[in-house]
Image (cartoon, rainbow, N blue to C red):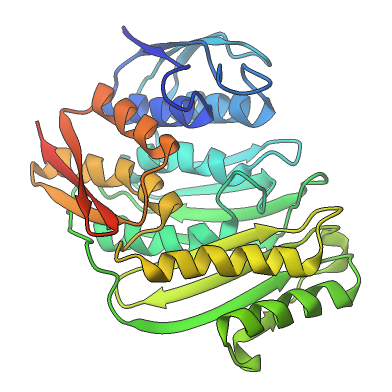
Length: 345
C-alpha cells in the first residue's frame, strides 16, 4: 500500500483530493497520514469527508479513518461505476472540489454518469462554478472527455445551499494529450458581478471601478442575474477569452472590505496575467496537471503547457501525481513564465 505524507509541500486538502482521484483511476490503495497538517485546523473537514465518501461510493472502496477531524486515512478502491450520483456537503463547503475529486475517475469509467452536487459553488480558496464551466471544462472536452455543467443555484459562504449538475461521458478511449503553450489572441473580456441580497450599489461600484482600471466599456460590465434568496454573497469575476484558453479570475467581497478594494485586487490579478506570456494562470496550471497526466500515461505521449506561475499548491500536486502515475513532470523557466513538461516515465 502506498504511503503519503499529507504534510508535504503546502500540506493542504489538494493532496487528499488528488490521491483519491488517482487511486480510483489506477486501482492503487494508499494510506495518507498527517492530513492537512499545514492548515490551522488539521484533519478532515466536512467538505474533505464528502470527497472521501463520494470517492468510496463511486468506486466501492474500503475506507478506514473517514471521520471528521481524522488525520489519517486508508483507502482501497474497487471498480469505478458510471451511473447517477448525488452528493451534498451539507454546509458552505465547496461542492466544486468534491466534483473535481470524482471527475477523473468517472471520466475514465465505461458509460455516462450524471452527478448532482450541493454545497458552496462560489467559495474563497476553491474553484467557483464559473471557473469550471468557462476555463476547466473546455480543456477537458479538448482532451477528449465530454462534460456538460448546469448551475441550478448559487451557494456562497457561510450559507451554502448551492447546486449544480454534471453529465460526464466515458473517455478512456478518446483521451489525447496536447500542448498548450500559447493562449492565442484575445477574443473577448468581460466582468460579472454576483451580489445577491446586498445593496445594488455594491455591484455598481465594483463594476465601475473595475471598468475604469481595465479600460472596459459598459457592455463589458455585467450585473449578473442572481436570485436574492441565494445570498448574501458577493463575487466579482473577470473573464479573459483567448483563442486557446479562457481564464476566469475571482475576487470575493467580505465585511470590512470596500467594493473598490475588491475591484482593485481583481484588476491587479488580471493585469498580472496579461503581462505574462504563460497560457494558464496559477490555479488552472495546478488543476490541469492531473487530467493531462492521465492522458499522457494512457497514450504514452508527452505533452506540455506554459503558466504564469507555479504555486506551492501546484508543486505539491505534481508530487502526488508522480506517486501514482509513471509520468515525469518537469518545470523550466520560459521568459517571465514557466513551462511544465509531462512525459511517460
